[in-house]
Length: 97
Image (cartoon, rainbow, N blue to C red; front, side, top):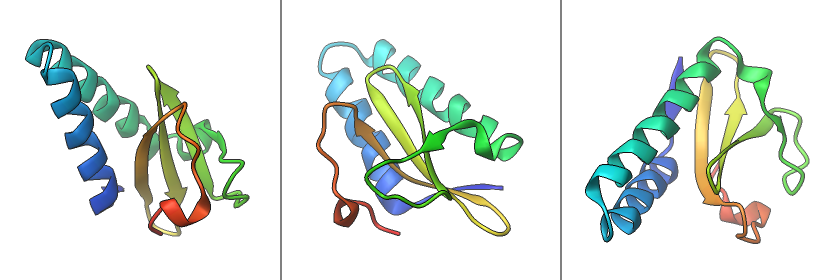
């Protein structure tokens, strides 16, 4: 099972809102593709690479567009922790776990 943290849901909404300023159609497309990419994690949780700034082999990331989907492999599920822009300088304390 794939679960979304509050932060990840907020991030997705922020991405939608930002893109929707110019195009709601494009915003819908981008957020749907992010959702589809996350769905893959249910069957292939180790598809992403380890997130270097967190240094935990269970916290991984997969890229899509200009974003990084950060997620944690847990015992019974995968939790999407955040969706952040690739240029953002992320620190461990920026990610709720």
